[in-house]
Image 1: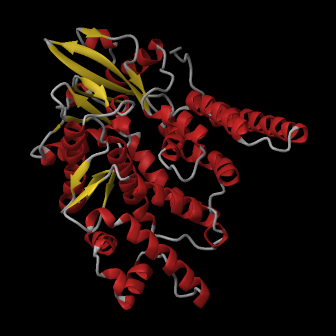
Image 2: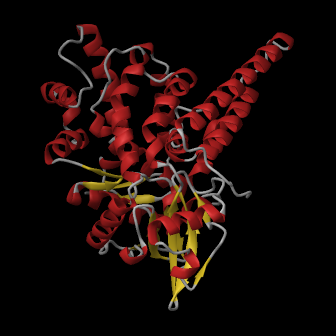
Image 3: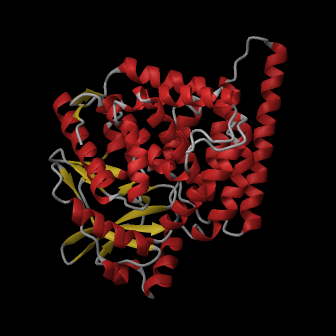
Length: 430
């Protein structure tokens, strides 16, 4: 993949890139309308492919939070047509890498030394590149390291990038403006944390140490002496990215082992640590040669208060849906419904969220669950498609759901999708 020589870092440069992309999208729509005039049966498939290609190309050159948003959107199979999912999912681990001179510049800023002065060997080409940074392989004194280097300007552009992404997100994906405004502060906070590698270092060391007992999960050791606010160094773990593994059918026994490891890892964090690795896309995991799950990225972590944990996870209580008073209180607590709602609004949202809770809590209703169940996931996706088109949700003046739930919902959504792709059967009790 061709290396990128420079990244637009100023607001003017990045705004110019967004404007150019908007013009390309406009041209793609004109072409689509032209096709419709010639053929009334023409679908939007070509339009989606053209827009997905142009948007991804632009965001991959900008990198940072703009590309991270694309990565997040690619995980939502209800929100985006498949053309966008396929393009945007590349942001997980195969974005265009940064050229080596820019890598050297970051090292000099952090350590006053080049990579070759700090390590015995250092790969000039990135081994993989994602939305916020890229990874190089290094050696020193016989040890192998994975060195993650942050792209220039990523931290400084988070706020302005998210502001520029807003009109594209609202128009093209018909997102609810009230929900976007409510949740964007949460997204911004998590993304700013992701640009602080000193914070990631501390969290990585703490969470991996506390989780080391989990069966079939391994973590790298981290090295503060080779790390900074823009560089993070850890052990190199031999293995294949989970995303590569999932491109082919996984043998059932191996799928169950990997899936159970993933499930146990997440539920230990959710219910014991109250701090969770909130970025469960396949690019953040490796499968080792011995078939274990390697956890290699703690950049996005969501912490929970005891109060929020209690309110959120009461939704998994199978008796909740049968208790009208408890259910309404839970929905008020989590802002699915509001005191100011009309009787019709309250009835509508209670019905919608009751169905959603019933669907998403099914894996917890028995001691084990088969995530290969196509009927179950078809039902989830169909219901997601149905509610995404509901004008009552899109036009609501209030965000439906507390912002603290955003990354917990995202965690479960990503976890369920990976387990479905693995076709794993999981012991789900927690």
